[in-house]
Image (tube, rainbow, N blue to C red):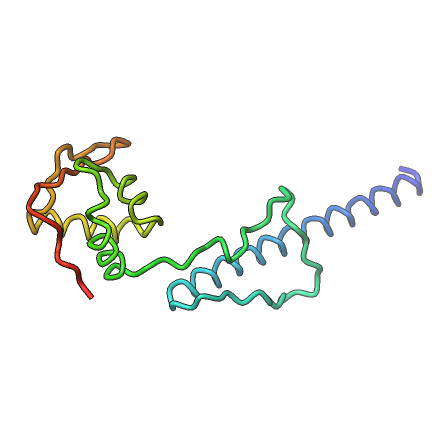
Length: 156
């Protein structure tokens, strides 16, 4: 190995180290942003802190894919289960006679947490306002049918 080969190899190793450290830092920053977003959604805050302090002295690099993380504005604050239930009851007349969850999303005008929507639909079934025509399976959606017993009483 010549002196020139030694210097090129040493420079290449240093560059690989720097690149690896930037990738690790970028991964850390992405995980930290995701954690802050999760925390803000759990605590009911509508804003996410955009200033994340780096704990290392190395520079933060953008993700290699160039896509980055979606802005916090795209992660719309979702409604609680009681709010979803109130919205379902308010928009129930807009539901078709037979409907699926997708029809409910369309009538509501937004996509609530699935668990909150299914809880509300289960209450409508228990109240006798809706019955399950097809329980669905796998990728096949549950099909609901209005029973004609009227509209559900509104809550709140």
